[in-house]
Length: 505
Ligand code: HEM
Image (cartoon, rainbow, N blue to C red; front, side, top):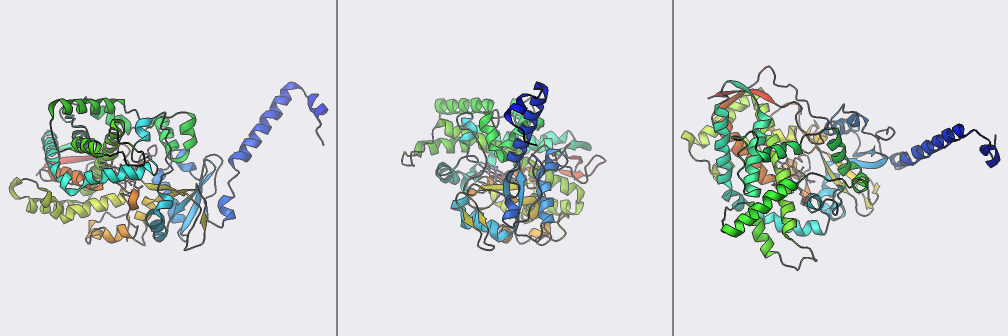
């Protein structure tokens, strides 16, 4: 039957509205599903999309953690070098093959040097200027300038701050002998104090002051309710929402005020602490104008300090907490590590940078912990120009977002036998081979990898040494086994904490 304009006009108004609504939804559906044949047309295996949620329905429903879901898909498409998914109708390419990952993150890096991470610099200048978010050429310029502040020599000068915070943890834990403690909160306090001191020159005292504002602020940053998990999700997957709704990544006003206060104090007292504040100030002074017009002004400096604070404290405290959790389930590994600590530092001798470097088993324990629990469960890159994957001939179109599922790779039995087992021995030869072949990616890969990896590892090692040389951690009735990850968080964080019993040795 043909519907003409005059027959339409004769339809009662209520029916007209119904027809318009139906047409609207049909058009919307067509628009949102317009790309759903994208991967099929290119011969790429793909996870069939569901309307709106695409291939991440389980994640949107809160039933599965995004890292574990990508890991599950990684296992499902185990014959393919990559597979396709859809997020809100947009096609994403998920890489499986380490050689292809290497090409994209290292060899052909210039074509994949940015993340798809969105940020509206005008609405949120603090986050927009952060190294994590910056796009080239600004990113490269700032990264080159910041890299030297993380050299071993500079970190060595900050060891005194780490040791001071380690002593605070030790004193704090004395009160909990033979009691159940939630170790994630302890490690978060340790890292909040440490990072606040190193990057803000500020004594936060989270162990003495339960209401320390720094700790309250840092805790809020990683507490995910439905609203901030949608917001953070949009930064990674729906960048348009960020500009439409002028979303702000984080409320950084408090951190900004603290940093400015520190700058004023340093200027008036000429105090030097050999911390990152001193290094950032030096960098600002030496930053000449010959940088493609890119400035490293005070705002940019504050933005980096805030980035380092946020990127540093939760990642590293997670690693400490998960290491102690695994050690409480594996008393044999714990004893081996305590022996190593005892032999390297007999009679409570002073911890030195060199003694930490020599603790091989401690390094193996942390490497294995980060294999099992990489904080960021996926890496993310954007394709700048059409690119041909030489191994398969697939053309990745300009603008295609790429995901690298770290958890899937870290649990692939082809690279790690019995991957569910916590086994530090698999890193007895170090991580070099596995990192270089892109089978081990807790700190990412290529020039855009983690800038703070060495700082994070030293902080984690010092924290673990201070705890284990005085205490044994044991499993208790409320120790989770297996760990449940918080599905609302895009990061691999434990849901409900990590309880264990602490016993003085
Ligand atoms: C155990 C601790 C840590 C883990 C597991 C970790 C992990 C990561 C990962 C996976 C990335 C993305 C890399 C990529 O895309 O290839 C990253 C980037 C980054 N991390 Fe870390 N990180 C840790 C500690 C730190 C610390 C202590 C800092 C600062 C002091 C830091 C600062 C950054 C920054 C600024 C970036 C962005 C780098 C860029 O885009 O140039 N991270 N980190």
